[in-house]
Length: 411
Image (cartoon, rainbow, N blue to C red):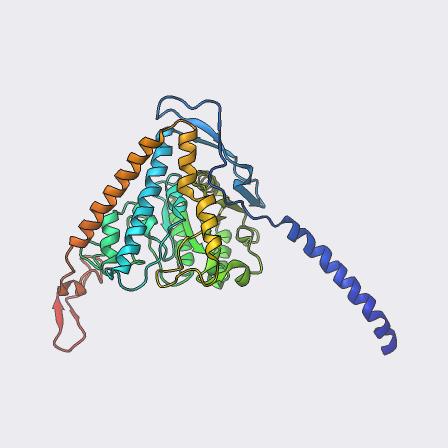
């Protein structure tokens, strides 16, 4: 009997190997990465003279991929004024992050500081597609979201400096900052995903007809709490768009080294997903419009993977060149920069002359310089502020003890 099994074993193993290769091959062939180009859109028809008159753009066929759902339409309705606003906001966001970089190097910023240089199309494109009463929650790379969601540049920078004029009164730093319907910057990797699920539950319970956009990175994508959130959101069909902001590296580890499936938009099991070229702000805007419409139609959650790229390191303590080459970074800067890509379109379509765009650049620089000085001039919080903002105003106890027996603050 053992001889028979031994004789059959090689052929059975060969058969299993062949079956496995047949199973694996289609998924490998089907796997496709979004091409990260920033200027492959064309105009449908003529561009109107008026800055407020809408016209149609045709996005590249490589802008989207999809899972268990038809991809978004490649047509985007926009105006010349909106194009200029997109460009202006991205320039401001980059100027702000560069200012934060320099301030960190000048020791005005202490502690953690995670910048979004290269990823400006994500926050700017999303904000142009969502509504003020929609909720958004993200991880620690959050500065641009804070400002797009109603914060000020001076308030964000002052918060980095630990000053009283900061959005969290100097107590939150780079991550723990909030505006109405923006629920942080969250420092614990992946912890914002179940919080976002709770926000979406509240929206459905209260019948607000608004959506929640819950962002996390490729580095957080393998956590159990992420999949638990997917499960709960789909069971209850919550209006939640789960967004994997895939900038290719979780800290210093490439997505390919940490994840056996790097097609993050396919990882919701029965939840459909879309993948978006997030180096193109126009594709981000269109993809977000599609996602919002889908989740508010009563169909439940959607996964959206925004494929992007950060030029700097994970944080300012990371040079960002030990796990990738300088050539790779330079190639992305030269061929796929979101700001330059939109600038090329604006000039090509006759929306603005290059000389006028230089004025937009100058205005953005002057604004950020002014906001930076305001942040620097903001005073440090007084010592008694240590006892403030612990409770919602009006719900404080009679007193709060400090670090020492005799240190007591009475409200």
